[in-house]
Image (cartoon, rainbow, N blue to C red):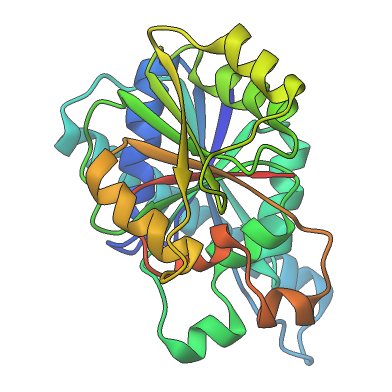
Length: 275
């Protein structure tokens, strides 16, 4: 059984990620772990025993709040509750703690909502963008306007550099969903020139449910802009991307990855794997 860690801060915005996770779990029989990180500053004058009691009291309150929060969302979806549990932890660095906990429970995916960002937040980052840039575990990012619906189509954009290994991960994700999978490769040539290895991989995997398509890049637009325009035509249930994480902070800031850029202006759920 797959395990999905779903983060929430109790905001209305975070409900989108929860709704998507509920839908995904209902179609894949996955276990859901709803997770909240709370920040508590320790007063310097407090003794350790007082601090520990305060942390436990606050954690218990938040855990009850989390359980009620999730229950209310399930009640509104009128869906049968799948296998799930709620967890609250105390930490100061949220992104790092989410990754650490996901690794501890051996989560297959991390799911969270995003509402995009203005210019200042684009410079300093968002939780979603930070996780995409650092998490070894695939991250599902869901826009705040998402409304729950059947997941029946997946759009995977690939540069074909590591098609075989990347496609295997996408197919594994799609296996319980049995959704229509469209693999799109953007190229700059007048005609896409696939080598023998790529041609062989396509021939092996192409089927009624798996389609491969080469699209010529429009040099008047960035890749992100072209993907955004094509999303409106394809209308997938979820977009899948792979991103390189082995770059310096300065490189990521100056030349953001396609996945990170899309986080700031997206209207379709997105699954991002580490390259």
